[in-house]
Image 1 (cartoon, rainbow, N blue to C red):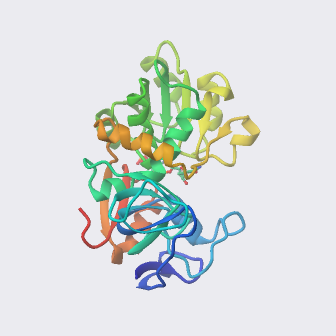
Image 2: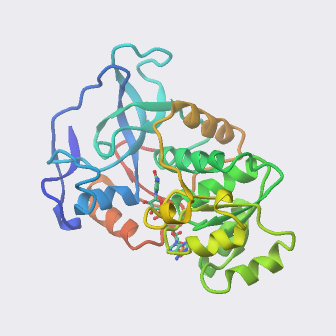
Length: 305
Ligand SMILES: NC(=O)c1ccc[n+]([C@@H]2O[C@H](COP(=O)([O-])OP(=O)(O)OC[C@H]3O[C@@H](n4cnc5c(N)ncnc54)[C@H](OP(=O)(O)O)[C@@H]3O)[C@@H](O)[C@H]2O)c1
């Protein structure tokens, strides 16, 4: 198969597109012919080597944690899915940006989602849903999403609104119309946030989901009034010392199916800022690394919609 790969840890110059061995699904796994694979910060954090002690990978490695495509092989013990089904889902921390990828969690992709949308849905959806569930039920609550314009943040806004929350989202001003379109009341992150929120939510902020890892977590705890009302998916540095729950993405087919149900109802539509061809993988990583993606960026393979 053709795949994006890197043979050593390093910058985007390590990324090549070349022939690689076809992966095989193990017990409980499926293999898909990939139509589209999402690009996420974890891809370049792992590729750069910064996480090599925490998340070691075998080199050469195929970047990519999520994809959509048609099932082409089924591992032992898997039922409820057939060859030819269109599914989106999650594999290991690497492996998705290739013609073939193995998934260990998946769900049928809603027909309303293009391949680009479904290819960028899985990681953001399980992270956002996991974070919102860790906060308790968001229904009827006012929820602040810090970093609301990114992949996880934009999914969290739409999913929290779909669950019945009132959502305030932070982003730079150029993304405020985007946040309003997602269903959030937009405001700017950074100094003065508490004062801006006092005007936007006079009865206070009930719950906070941090997806930004910008160092704002102490301010977010003050805004919420207690660390119990805050969950971060991103701030590994400050969560422990502040007593804030850190929610990690899990390969959970149930969460993917829940996101797909919201998708089929038209209440959650993954937003894609830009797609790249497989040969543009280095540019796609560089785009993500700049830190200002609006929604998702996605690599499209042959035949993708
Ligand atoms: N724990 C887990 O399992 C897990 C899973 C997925 C992701 N993550 C982590 O969660 C974080 C977000 O992931 P992602 O995929 O959503 O990233 P992303 O799409 O690359 O996020 C980009 C967004 O960050 C916003 N941003 C930049 N600086 C900001 C700041 N100072 N305050 C608030 N927002 C800011 C940008 O908004 P503007 O352009 O408007 O500035 C942009 O929309 C990353 O650190 C990622 O590694 C963790």
